[in-house]
Amino acid sequence: MKIVACIKRVPATDVQAKIAADGKSLDSAGYQYMTSFYDEIAVEEAIKTKEAKGGDVTILTISSKDATKEVRECIAKGADGGVILVDEDWMNRDCRATAKALASKLTEMGAELVFMGRVATDRDNASVGPMVATYLDWACVTNVVELEVGDGEATAKRETEAGLETVRISLPAVITCDKGLNEPRYAGLKGIMAAKKKPLEEAACDAADNQAQVLSLVLPPPRAEGRIIGEGADAVPALIDALRNEAQVL
Amino acid sequence: MSTIVVFVEHTGGNVRRASLECLGAAHATGAQVVAVLTGEGAADCANTLGAAGASRAIVLTGTENYSPDATAKDVAAVITDQGAKGFLAAASSTGKDLAPRVAALCDAVLFADCTTLSGEGDSFAVTRPWLAGKAIANCGSSAAVFCATTRPNVFTPVTDGGNVEVMEKPATIGGKATVIAIEAKPAGKLDVQEAPIVISGGRGMKDAESFAILENLAAAFGGRAAVGASRAVVDAGWRPHAEQVGQTGKVVSPQLYIAVGISGAIQHLAGMRTSGTIVAINKDADAPIFKVADFGIVGDAFEVLPALTEAIQGVVSQS
Image (cartoon, rainbow over all chains, first blue to last red; front, side, top):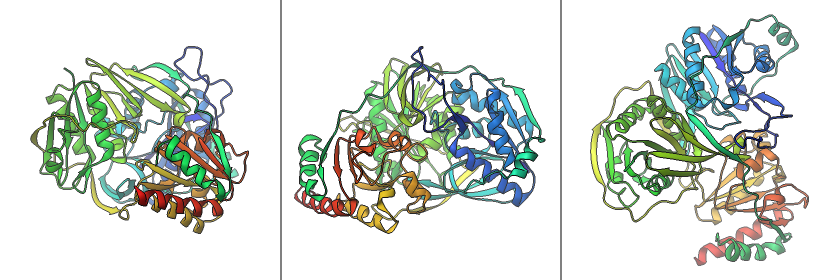
């Protein structure tokens, strides 16, 4: 089976936001980057599926060439190769343009099962997975916490506000992965050495123009200064009073 | 007048609160609102949507098990039929799963988890968080259909709309993905993103068993509160990951957020800083959580929580 795990290179989750001079983008000077948290779960599930069902795993991303580091790290865990659709403006590519470019490459690659994180931790849009599936006319399950892949079909469980949903899908499919699906492995030294010899293709990203227009980007308004009500259980009556009369939430 | 199509979710014969808020957001732009509903009980819910701001409700009939891809096709067809310039759904598990598919069928970009929506004629704009709310983007779109999901607990439902005209449309049968079972949560258990009150515990709770005192406080609020958790707690296996609040969990904005034994890592603060009122209870007076809290108590959770629970029981039983 031709398995693909799509990843996104995102700013590390401990970065502070700083607005760039244009007032429409992030000032990314000094940012550290990482593979988006949920995409690590996608990579793990792709490798686990290969181990159980056979086939090969390719890591696919849209990014600047700097993503070579993240793609190699993912390959080192047990994937067979990687593809970077090179796009210097990847951070600002909207979900539709990203999904279209991925869908077109996935078709060219002959992908049959695609894993992604449920959301990228930079733009938090959680849309590319189901959009790719729709452009390809494939099945898709989002926020998956349990997966069983059969022949030409799969059964997945996803968490919703109402409870745990069981979804049956036909393959090919896009699966977006949530925390709880697996525990991502660490790459071993052997994997890291082997990853250096595995193919990493850099291809031009033929992305559609953005429809999304960022009109302005601002920092959230600071919260009003709070106060310490008191110490220990003795402070409870004063807290109740503040919640009731000041905040009016009781 | 512009038209906005809203996908409306319902459960147990009631329209979900997040969908009522979404209808309210659409109505507030001045657009004509067309609701789309599917599933058992949809027709009865559709009849109630006039007050909530819909002037028309389209019930997809003949559905058996929910299929997001089949429903997306039906919703996209309604958007075309109605000449709609906007499409909204709640940023719930179902809405966030469906809306990107509808957007792709309209070949339109989607803005998820929006916290404001404005409209002028056929032109719309939203604000939405980046980096879990560390920055706020104000966005417009050049797409023919403006597609967005609205964050729960942010928009205000309408209760004095008008009349609704209910129509039926045969649903597309045979999707590529089909929901075959739902293991319902225990009755009365709210999701952290939907609950008006969230009580979260951190490492300071010491172990999984101690979360019982948070459950007790949540219960004292009479079914309006959910228990949340920090990443450390979820990673330790004390609580299910569905309860994790923060940049790699869920972003919440309840009316009241109570953080107990949570120091306040930047990733956690990003996930709850838009809450209405924030209360922090922590032994360490220097914990970063106190910087975003409106009210803080420095103290041991095991001493403060039982007293707070008793006090809340008193307040709730009086009201």
